[in-house]
Every structure is written in C-alpha cells, then in structure tokens.
Length: 334
Image (cartoon, rainbow, N blue to C red; front, top):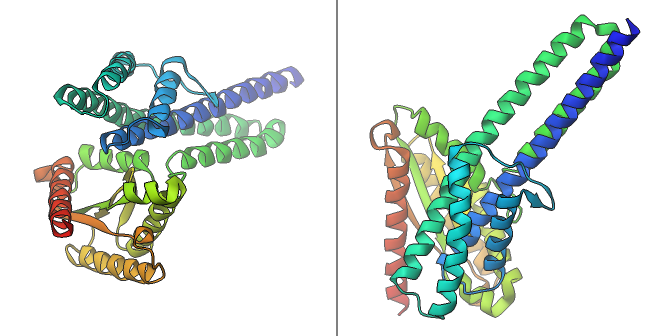
C-alpha cells in the first residue's frame, strides 16, 4: 500500500512538472511569434535598422533552436517543420538584400518582406491552434489525475492541493501569453485565437469589424523617443478598451494598429464605441499642448455575416477602408 502510494505520488509529480514546463514553453513560444509578427510590421512601416530588426533576429533564432530567456517548446508538425527553416533562410537573404538596397526599397525588397510577413502570420495562427490543443490536453490530463486521486483520497490529499496549484500556475502562464506586454490589453495571439473560432465555426449573424491605425507615430518616436511613442500607444489602447467595455472586444493587432470586433447590436454598438473613442481622444488631447503628444488615428469599418463572407474578408475590407481614410487625412495635411 505504501509502495503504491509512493509510485502514484512520484508519477503524478513528474507528469505535472512536465505539463507545467510544456505550458511555459508554449507560452514563451506564443509571445515569441507575436513579437516576430509585430517587429515585421514595424519594418514594413519603414523602420530601418534598430530594435525591430534585432527583435526579428532574436525571435527567428529562438524558433530554430528553442533557446530564449528560458526554453521554448519546439513545435512539431508539417507546418512548423516547413515554415520555420524557410523563415530563417528568407530572413538571412532579406537582410543581405536590405543592406544592398540601402534606404531604397525596391520591388524585391517589398516582395521578400511580404514573404516573411506571410510566414510569420502562418506561424502565429498555427501556434494559437497548437496552444489551444495543448491546453485541452493538459486539462484532460489533470481531470484524469484527479479521478485517480479521488479513488485514493486518503493517499492523495496532499497532492490534490498541489495539483490545483499546478493547474492555476499553468492557467496564469497561459493567460499572460495572450496579453500585450505594453498596453496590457489582449494581443495579436489572442486575436488570432478568437478569429480562428470565427473561421472554424462562423456564426450565422451580422458582426462588425473596426480597424484603427495611429497617425504620425514615427514623428512622435523621432521627437520624443520610443518611450514617448509607446506612451501614445498605451493611452490609445486604454481609450479603446474603455470604450469597448460591454459592447465589443479590442486587440492590439500589431505595432500601432488595433482591431475591434462587435457581435451584438450592429451598427449601434460600433457607432456608440466610435463616438466614445472620439470623445475620450479629444479629452486626452486637450491635456497636451504639444501636437506630437496628441493622439490621431484613421479607422475603417466593415460589417457582414462571417458565414457568408468570411471573417478574413471583413477584416480586409475594414483594413482597406482604414488606409483609404489615412490617405485622405494625409492629403488634407499636405
């Protein structure tokens, strides 16, 4: 009896430790891929050299080796095994092309950057799926352990408390992987997790999608430093989250872009949300005399039935309208 208790306790402890380590590795991997996608967006926006390029270097190396500030989970499966080596090779070629191109961005430069961005998007979506599958597997495992230990209640009372603690730690780590470290609102990985649900099980009803892109952030970074630009991103993220409370969901989509989704009363919820965003932005700007410290943005909106049009088409339409608005605003300034 004592031997059986010891075997059960050692086996459960070892497997629980492995599950926690795997969860940590997957959480770090999710953050790594999200950082990679965000850095590529910043390079696409025109940042030559510096922090975003270093971030891509670090993230690509971590994906290949599994080494980071702590270990990453090395993903298995045909998508990862094909995409990660290609991404690594394309990035090395891209850096050479960028060095030769200097400040001029020709078609080859943009095409290679588009390939990198596409691979990053593939990894981001696949990582979200992998994370969900692993979380479900870990949950099933914990339920099985609890069942065994309920039978042996006198033996496992101490471990039962420990297993709950392990489950809580794993949940906390998983939650952190889906929060943007700068704005503290849900990040791109969490957005992809939500969008995957719309792709796999689209609801047969009208929803609304709104895209936001902040204006003149590069000028703010140049004048105030990246910390000044980061403050604007943080404040705008706060404004969007407060305005969406109770009516929709908001994510930091990448860099200075945000996405909002509304599944309730369309377009009333979206109209109310945008009105509140404008009011809060005006209130914020009144407190800042320097125009470089003020928030301005362009937004685009689309609505439709994701079962008929697809969620990606709705996002594309909102994104296109946002950039058309951004061009109009630029023409007015010029």
